[in-house]
Image (cartoon, rainbow, N blue to C red; front, top):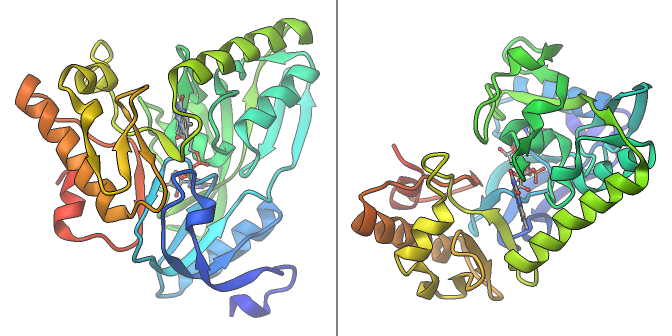
Length: 308
Ligand SMILES: Cc1cc2nc3c(=O)[nH]c(=O)nc-3n(C[C@H](O)[C@H](O)[C@H](O)COP(=O)(O)OP(=O)(O)OC[C@H]3O[C@@H](n4cnc5c(N)ncnc54)[C@H](O)[C@@H]3O)c2cc1C
């Protein structure tokens, strides 16, 4: 039983998940566990994967829509796994739960650059690897040298090199329902800390101008259908900024951002996503696919937003 494993202190029942997501939406998880080390995370997933109940690895919850009906399984939240180590002059290893903005600044203080693009991405290293998070023309795929993973298909810890991680636009070859990222090694470059800090500030200021930071949101809702076709532009030109469903609305600042005006529910959000998709399909004949992941109970109609 998980409750009896040594070292695992925090097991919470009927845990409200909204507070752990940037959209501030989500019902209760049957169980929430917050390991404080990669070893603990591996031991927990080892246990869970041998049982019959569903489980889910949660990072910063910044690319996620959690059902307001909740999740009848165990959520393992990584954000306490924050160890960061400098292994070589330009190589660092970060725990799965290290926050990308914090890591970018930490690296800058060491005179290490390459993470500036991630300074405004409010996710974790684990979530960043799974999503191949990227911005300003760079992405995790460029800096990840290898990742250590608990592989629940073979019940062991493995290390995968960059090429084996199969990075493509906003995803990698890992399946988060079978693979838990424990840590990642990042190969960076060197520069003067002041120069790196200037680039970090520049990226942060750009976000403040162009994104609805004042409202709960989960970043870009839909993936760009093609590198030259930005989802935000297609949505804007389809008039999507006027769309609203209950307390969920399309941001007036950025048409690919959905904001929670206060008390929005997951079914309001999925209806809104459906309307956004329809607008772009009607105007451009292009199907938009969500970038967000989901957790918990959704109806068949709601799931259709994510495609077949
Ligand atoms: C204001 C804002 C701006 C954003 N800007 C960007 C941007 O510029 N570029 C961009 O790419 N994204 C952006 N995002 C989205 C998001 O921050 C990234 O996708 C980020 O990588 C998600 O990380 P997370 O830890 O929050 O993952 P979560 O949302 O917690 O989870 C996402 C997926 O990763 C899985 N996962 C998380 N951790 C692990 C782990 N350790 N092992 C296995 N699976 C795991 C989860 O199971 C889930 O499937 C933005 C979000 C917000 C709110």
